[in-house]
Length: 204
Figure 1: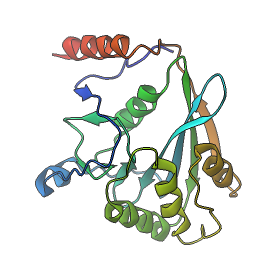
Figure 2 (figure 1 turned 90 degrees about the vertical axis):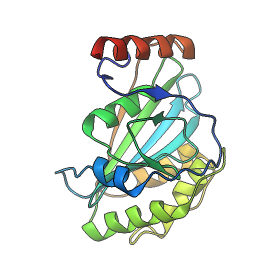
Figure 3 (figure 1 turned 30 degrees about the horizontal axis):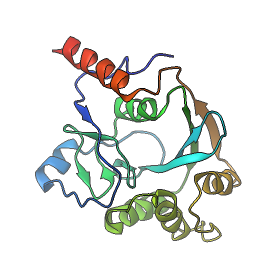
Figure 4 (figure 1 turned 90 degrees about the horizontal axis):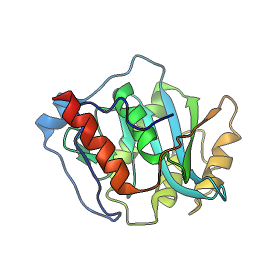
């Protein structure tokens, strides 16, 4: 599958990992808020090296009263997607696909684990990510496992620094559905930037 065929209208840029404090204004967050009509759900997203299967990054999508993406110390940024300290708002199906595609290339693939939860658990997860704060570089899995451990029904999650470890733990819960997403694009960031620029130019 080729990268970014669906990118129209998303001006993406790359940012260095780190605990950068970001706080989008209330009016922009409210305007971009997206309510998904699916069930309350936690979606753990793990990026893995295609050669070694070692985990490289952890994120958590939460479908509660609105759908957000917790992307701790992540590099996925867009002028059209408001952010508050690693919480991205307005996660429509298109943005979700774009996020997964962005992280998937010849050297990395993405594992998506979905678990339907109660509305109470989903709202607890939403509150937790909104109040956690910006996450330092290389702490994405530690922060995510801390959040998940604090949710009702997930107290046996062990806090870990390793994406594969958290994915393995989450995968043990009854009802978790797992799938993989792969792309064959080059790992060259310049090539990815060119593809994005071409898609944006074509959408004008």
